[in-house]
Length: 103
Image (cartoon, rainbow, N blue to C red; front, side, top):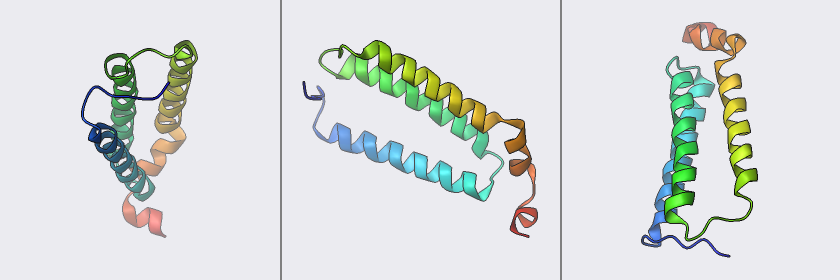
């Protein structure tokens, strides 16, 4: 079975570019230690997980047989991401001032 969206063929390009740029932007700001990045990463991860399943249910023509595995994997990776991003040891990194990180 191939992925055939109901919408125009550029749908895959547009959504792929959007999520790639969003991820790169967040990773860049996370590396720089911006304070707002932790919550933005949680929000973006939530929106991405929701988008994946909305796309899968409403855009793809039929549900693949492995959807239970994909659902479990989505939940496990989402929980892992939240745990890592909100880990108190990582909080210290984001609360330091920029000049403290550079020295």
